[in-house]
Image 1 (cartoon, rainbow over the protein chains, first blue to last red):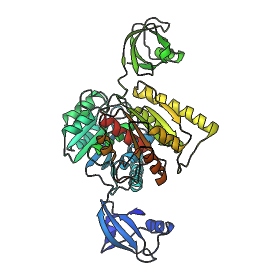
Image 2: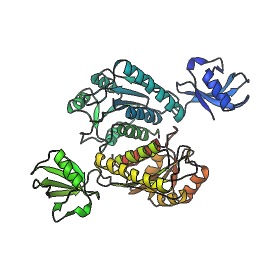
Image 3: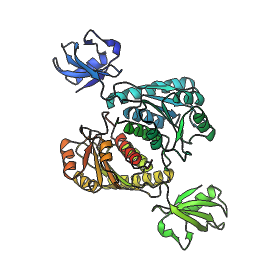
Image 4: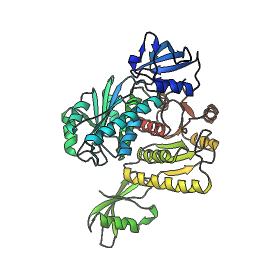
Length: 241
Length: 241
């Protein structure tokens, strides 16, 4: 069944008001009067709708929680990396169920966009997240935000009930053991470094703020592979996969 | 410590014979007489070596299993997809611990390279696998091979002790449940479809050959995301992450 996002404020009185773009899309898909499709409010609810006339009037038949939304929140904190890599992380982490993506600077980041360039990038990243949310049938569009400093990122990441700092030089605690030790957690964060990894002082700061330093195993993962891998593990572990 | 691959036949009599390329690399890294580095035979063994003279003579001090090799074999079967996608799958699945990558045609594949074009691609894919194996510190370079038909691919995938067919329309068996039901398995395969997914008749054939049809959850994953996600799950589950 065709599926659209619509802003929640456009749904009221048993009727959904589609944007011109979505109304045009309905025409392209040749959905006709009386046929049904799904509208998602981008806030975790799916509405089964029926086209009630040929002018794009839409009647709501039923609503239910969007099946694509995980039962836990997992924020992905990814250090700035080259454009194609960070874009791939955003796209794939939205598919895999991230609740939000937070991009941040760290000492070994090669690229640290600022000012107008950063604004343009953030805008582009949010569009990538929206497209990925549509394509993967999420019920919400995860936000993409940027932290001004590494310390700000760590502070925010540490707010999760289980805050996982993925660190290449961590030799003791595995991601799996960390997940097993914390049954029933509903909010997670996973934080991963740039191309050159984190510096020891950065790892120390994360631990100081209460994050768990974990290893993703003996293989060295690229900066764009690590977040997908850690997020897949959280989703598997919490029965969201 | 610097780390090189070398063909196993170049290690004998307590001495490793480096290729000209690696000998040059040693010079670039300014490794000097008496200093140590690691040589991997590409067959799962790491050798701790010492530069014994200034002409590239190398003495072997110790050997041990490569820590980057997982304790289980997991073959990744990925359907042909656009070049950048299949290349990304190969690169990242090598990092994540795949024992081999097998590329195959299926009904909805948009791209089905053949003849000379396929030979060139396979050669390129194998190079990507080798680079990824080096970068991620694997002990073996996974092979990349191509199956001539879908049925051949299914037959080969079904040889694993636990053969997982990742299918968008599977609604009952989750990947996690399938993994939990089969404790102690040492050989896995994960098979994923092209951009448009598998056809029902293809899923039926896979099951007929003994593969387990599993879902990766309610979100629709892109063809390049699904193999990384499934492989991460196998590695997490088998304590290789």
